[in-house]
Length: 80
Image 1 (cartoon, rainbow, N blue to C red):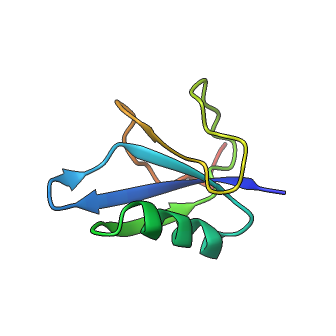
Image 2: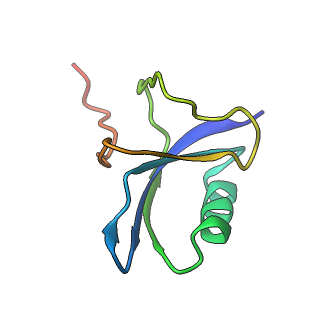
């Protein structure tokens, strides 16, 4: 079963918008992202915890989506 991961991706032009990827584990998510963005740095990957989106985040392993207008922000475990 796949989980949703969010990623911070940077290339020569700068920071990309928030990227989501479906994968079974973080390592697999990194492999999918590296294949999709071969000239970019995958700066961070995290499970989004309680993050919800009304945008299409895909349903199958390897589904990668960019979310224009949404900037990367590390999920906080300090919800309160």
